[in-house]
Amino acid sequence: MSFWIAVILLLALALAILLIPLMRTVRAQQSDQRQQQNIQIAREKKQQLETQLKGAEIDQATYDSAYLDLQTSLALELDRSAADSEKTRGKWMAIVVLLAIPVASVSLYLVYGEYRVVENPQLALAAPRQQTAAAPQMSLEEMTAAIKQRLQDNPEDAEGWFMLGRTMMARQQYDQAVTAFQRSNDLLVDEPGIMFALADALAMQNNGNLLGEPEALVQRGLELAPRFPNGLWLAGMAAEQRQDYKAAHRNWSLLLPLIADNQASSREVRGLLATLEERDPQLAKTAAADNAAGIKLVVDISAELKARASPDTAVFIYAKAMQGPPMPLAVRKLQLSDLPVSLTLSDNDAMMPTMKLSSFDQVIVGARVSSSGNPVAQSGDFYTEREAVDSKNPPAQINLIIDQVK
Image (cartoon, rainbow, N blue to C red; front, side, top):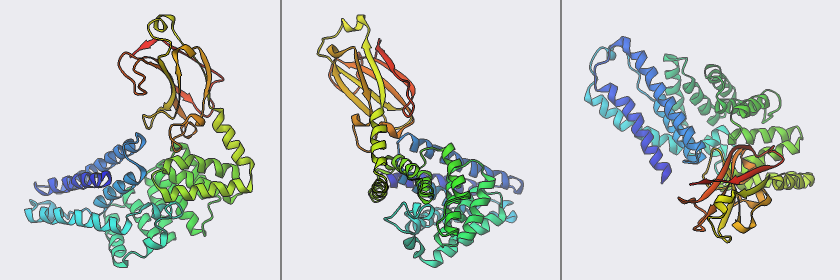
């Protein structure tokens, strides 16, 4: 349901962008400026989607589909000729756009619905590349023609080149996909999604070989977006190809919690991890040791606050992501009488098997005395927190003193 809500909202945005200009007089000298404004609005909407994804307001599949619809609406925007720009747009044109955009968007989704298959066919096993390639040829040709026409009118449109690259990947025309993605990458520098798409296209152009330039692109993209699922997937594939099984295991282990909503992909990644561990049993032992290492804490409470609570009052000691889901990644429940206490928070304390402490670089650690015994923070609770703790390389010991009142 949330996916379709996102689709409807984005379609409404696209229609608003297109219909409002059609209902008023447009001069030729204003046409280019308006087109740039439309592109800027779409980019801002893209940033909003990325923020929602990072904040766990939407999942990766919803983001991917919503982003496809946003790009499609731009790619299919009607050309405005100089003659048309000198006169008032008729209401009939608005009606055409009102009908055409939703129909075109829904039709394109039915063709490209699992669009991660286009960018990363190995990851979305539930919808293999062959299924995408089997889509109606005429629809692909029409899509290609529309994008190429748009690029003829605006050859500096980075998002148009990216869309063309995806279409060429769907048609398995990898040489043209590489050219399109490279052009998009040149125009829109330091965009991780474009880097990963270009890397994938280069690999497919070379029979799936990710070594060399493709892997360099992936590593550069991961420096900018360390938790980008396609990037982690491709990095693991490249590492496996050069027989660096430890690096492959590390990348796919980081990927696993990020694709928890996709059962087919999760099963595939777990299978790949199991295969690596069969090749090198030490990988499983190292991963378990890393997960168990965790963050060492010494927790106490100020004498003033300790005197104001019963010894059997619940105390929650936790770690949560700096940016991500609000629920704790690791939690331990004690009593006030247990303080002071020394303990280690690790993946063994995870509330959910798919959301672990080791999956996030920057975390918040804290302790809270809950008079109600409720794990959810309440007004009047005693607490303390420390932000920006590096979960991969934490301090040898973190001292927490509960000295604040919520």
